[in-house]
Every structure is written in C-alpha cells, then in structure tokens.
Length: 124
Image 1 (cartoon, rainbow, N blue to C red):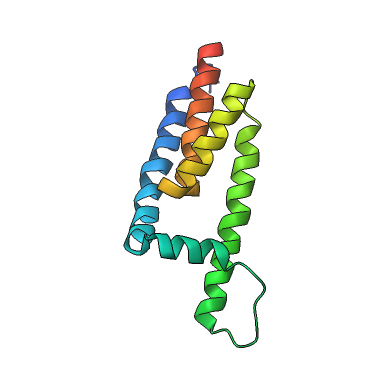
Image 2: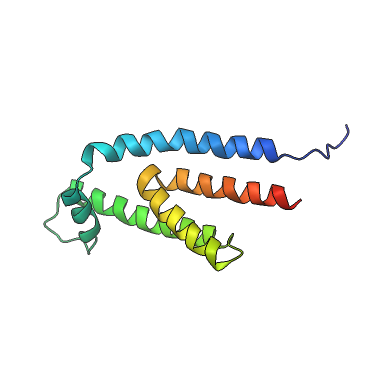
C-alpha cells in the first residue's frame, strides 16, 4: 500500500465547513427565540454563586452559563495562538467573540480554523 503525499487541505476545509454549517443552526435555534436586551443583561449579570433557594432550572442555567464562558474562553485563547501580527490578533478577538455570540462557539472555532488552514495553504 502506497502512502499518499497529496495535500489534505480540501478534506480539512470540508470538515471545518461541515462543522460550521452543522452547529450554527442549533445555536441560532436555541438563542433566537430568547434574544432580547433584557435576556442578554440577565444572562451576563447572573453568574454569581448558587444560593440555597434557587430552583433546579436556575442551577442548570447557571451551569450552562459557566460552561459557555469557560469553553468560549478556551476557544478564544486557542484562536489567538494563530495570530502572526497585532492586526490578526485584533481580528481574531473580534471574530471569535462576535462569532460565538452570532453562530455559537463551535461554528466560531470552525471558522477560525478554516481561516488558519487557508493561511497555511497559501504559505506552502
């Protein structure tokens, strides 16, 4: 069996695109029905410690908020590793933060990785 020396660039881009287009609709379906300034303020402001009088729904909501915050922070830090200049750094911060809010953290990471792969492909 011969080992292929062909580039896998197209396959990688297709996998990232599939991830983007598979995950973004789920994020939008979950977020859009609840999108309002009041809900955004409530979502951001209520990430304090759990009190004894909170319901199970309140506790689960808090866990999801912290999961989003920690996961998105990890994605942001990973993505910033790809920057080769201060302009790319700022662009990645805007893309990841804005992309996470708009299409979700998985789609934002997939988009960032597609950008990185395109950049690497141009270099080789």
